[in-house]
Length: 397
Image (cartoon, rainbow, N blue to C red):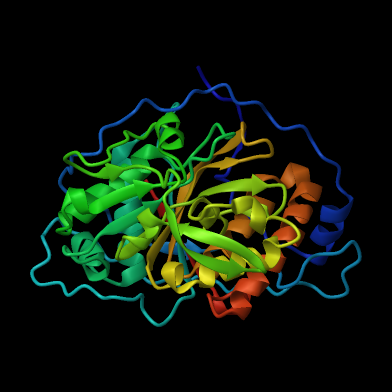
């Protein structure tokens, strides 16, 4: 069975002008398409093929618009433009194992770089190309870390002695989830950097939701582990005046990789890295309106999440529209250390690249998302001001 996709995200975004904001407020809505594609078949999470070396690529100028305040129907000033991307050459990764890489325990001090890796050949019909996915991961992580070798880049962030948790998005009620081949590519790269498979766990709220999204649940067998919190929560906390408890699977890890899917959200405008942690605690409904704008920010500011988060890999291989059963076909992943900058770029991609024919929908999404992005920046989680975001785009394949 196949899914109809409304449009590709390959066309380059254009800058958002004052005229664009008026159009965003005045344009009508078009109907979205309906998904009929079934989840990808379950894939075992045990193998780790040899790393491939991505060809050299040159970053191009990233899309040049990210407003700093929510748009209105009659704006009085043009929005601040996103600075042009740095045009340094992408280091060529090699398959040479790291000689003596020393893992770090926290990301670099600068938390404003967002790398967008695009690959025109990542989709082969309805199937993702594992080789293209690995190429995107290698190119993005060498660019983000400044390492020349992909294995060195992973080894600079993760130690073989650490327990690594990977938070995906497999929520019930959706037909599109964080893509299994992308997550598999990450687990392979971690193993090549020396992390034993049994010390890697893919998780979300429930094991049955992971299974229906195509993940092979593995509680305690050999290979990469994969299971949900399944009601195991401890350490009660108060956020936005609400009591919540974090999942044990998150609390038991040493390092965390956040792997969200870019999607529409009725309350938050979009769901991406910061909103993805609504699957990391027991009562997500408690941090929906009227507590959502502050709740998202306070959740990500918890030391248990903030201090464990080592890397964010945003899945924009498909971008989910309203209803969570239809999607635009994408060609990108985002990689960053900064959840606020990562999601600020995600909003820009959603609003101007994905749905120019539904600009009012994009304006509403932005107006909702900008509130919790500003709150996150206010809590010191990262950069929301476009002048502080270095959005680097790599065109591959």
